[in-house]
Amino acid sequence: MSVVPVEFAGPAPRRPAWFPAAARRLADAPAAEVLAWAVATFGSDLTVASSMQDGVLIDLAVRADPDVEVVFLDTGFHFAETLETARRMEARYGLNLVTLRPVDGVPTYRTHGTEACCDARKVDPLAEHLATRSAWVTGLRRAESSSRAGAATLVWDAARGVVKINPIVGWSDDEVAAYIEANNIIVNPLRDKGFDSIGCAPCTLPGAGRSGRWAGSERLECGLHLVPEGG
Ligand code: SF4
Image 1 (cartoon, protein in one colour):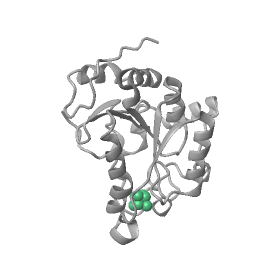
Image 2 (cartoon, rainbow, N blue to C red):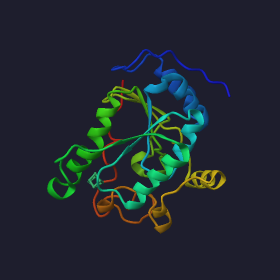
Image 3 (cartoon, rainbow, N blue to C red):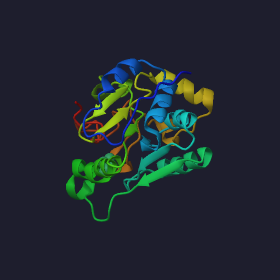
C-alpha cells in the first residue's frame, strides 16, 4: 500500500493548508489506507476514540500502528458489559488504552439533565484530551442515523482545532458484520440483546440504529460529533 504522509508541524488552531487536498484524496479510500495515512501523518499526536461497542475500529487501527493510542470515555454510568468489553479489548490487543473519567461532583442526568451530564462526562473530557493531540479517529458511519448521513472521511474539527478522521464512514451495517465475522472481532454482548448502539445504561434501550439512545426524546447525539466544522 502506498502511503503519502503530509508534513505536519504540531497543533493547528486553523485548518492546515494541505487539508482540502487530503480530504479529497481520502474521501472514498479504504479504511486501512486512511488509517495508514493518519499514523504516518500524525504519529503519537493521533488518538482513536472507542465506545467499546465492538472492536472493528480498534482492530483496524492497531493494524496500522500496534501502539496507537485508544481513548475510552468512562462516564461512570456504563453498562457492566461495556466495561468488561474494554478490559477484553485491552487484553487482546495489548492496547495503549487511555480511560478518561469526569472529575468528582460534575452534573449527572438526574440532577442537571442529559445535556449537562453528557457535556461534563463526555464532551469536556474529550475536548481537554484533544487539546493535547492533533487528530482523532472515530467509528462514525453515515448508515447509523440521519444525523450522521452527511459525514465525510476527513473533517476539520474547527472548534477543537484538530483533524477528525472517520475511516469507516461509508461502511454499511453488513460490511461491519462481515468484518466482525471474518476477523473474530470482540463485540459487546449487549449487541446480541438488541442494542444496535450502546451508550450509558440509564440512557440506552435496545433498538435499531441509534433509536435506543435517549429513547423517547429528540436527542440522537451526545455532543461529541456536533461540534461546528469549518475552516
Ligand atoms: S448518555 Fe446519559 S448517563 Fe451518559 S453521559 Fe450522557 S446523559 Fe449522562
